[in-house]
Image (cartoon, rainbow, N blue to C red; front, side, top):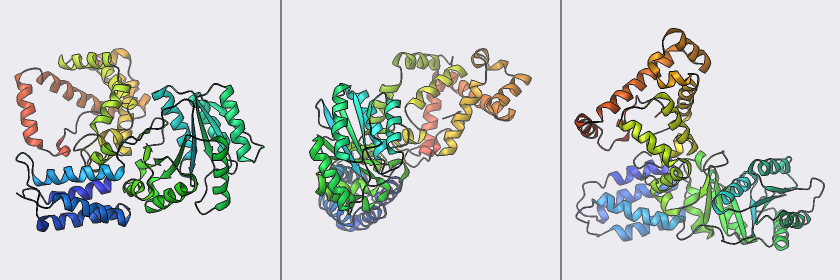
Length: 454
């Protein structure tokens, strides 16, 4: 997510290290690179120009604080300006029950999928009882898709495969939701071009008929600057109250996120970060600014951990690690806890200083392979890996679809991890940690590579 912008901004700001005072001379080249980084990330040229001018005005001539280097001072200024650019203040939906939400946007932007994700999110976070209303009468299977999503999330559903009048469908869906005692009604509309006057008029009529409290524009982040134009036109037509930015996981540039709020004056309220139903979250401008600058997003990471990890289980595992009594069954349990929090790539992206560490499909496959190997063991074998010899190794390899050498490699790595835990218990552990820190410095690539699945 926004990897390209993060790398280029990091490169631009790296040149300022070691400078005693910020001046026009030493800022000129760095800000030129910042501007180029923004433009290459598909940020609107007016937004990039104004952003750089604002940062320059705040940076030039500032005395550097005693404990802060110029580079850190500039990063703080850029962070604050990025947060302002992404949208200051609250990004939550209106707090009321019942709540009516209408989804609008282009073809293929992810409206139907986002409708299901939004229903799931609000049901879980705010205790809403959702109803999904299918108002897309043009796309084949749109009604079937929304019905399946409603069934998977346990939502009330209304759709009419015979009716072609969207306004009638909206009104009947509203009545059906009331009868089902739903207090969140989401209207999924058809995709339409902003220049298609007939379809734009259609959503205007639907808006008048169902009186939505929120009109959310679903925009594909990969559209770049065109997404900004889309937001502007839809807002002029129906007065959008917020934006759901989708496919952020698949767009390394992500300039749309930096331009939308400024150009369209519509706040980004939610973001889709993957294909899974739970890869959907509130958009926090300050947290996104931190991630763009490679600072990670510790707050969101902690929130995910609090939601998914059992505290008693975590404490039990921590105690086992302290005693070096950690076996493969425990390791499998920890893997399950981590998987609940999301993909490895999304978790690494939230860790400070880890933005340059790539976690792709290969790493995900390795983790899945490690899990398959452990699951092919008996409970007794997981608790006492020393039992794994000869025919047992062959059985486990066959059961997990790998070679015997892969099972041996996992066992070797696990033994190394156990030895490390034992060393960490005493004074040797503290000395080793000090030595590792000295060797690694601030380079995240210096992390140990031989821990299984990590």
